[in-house]
Length: 118
Figure 1 (tube, rainbow, N blue to C red):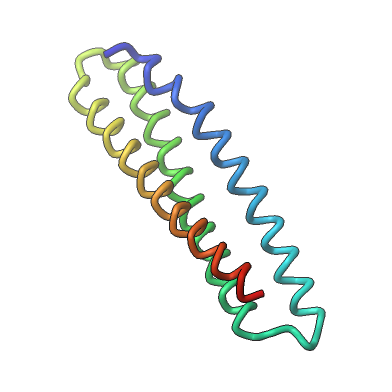
Figure 2: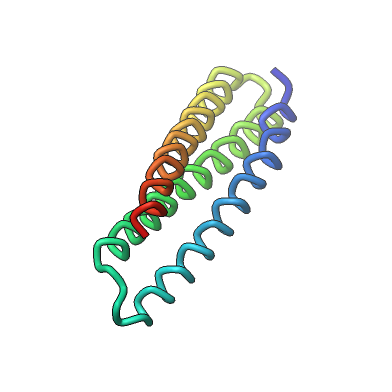
């Protein structure tokens, strides 16, 4: 495995991070607007806060994935005999990214039901 392989994945994960961050900002503004309206349904606000928590957890997994991809590439570039460690870091990075995507899928499914309630 070449050292640049893990590095090529980072820009794609960066786009996912940017997208998730934008969703978090929009959701945070919606929550703020709902709290400002005193007649807002508490159940909707709680559900949206839970959604914000899901997005926060998802973005943490994305940051971990970027860190692991970066670490795998640097280790492979500096220490050419550590291919096993680099592959392990790459696999854990992919698993972290998969966990993040699974959480984002749950977020998307729940967002539809919250939108219907709202």
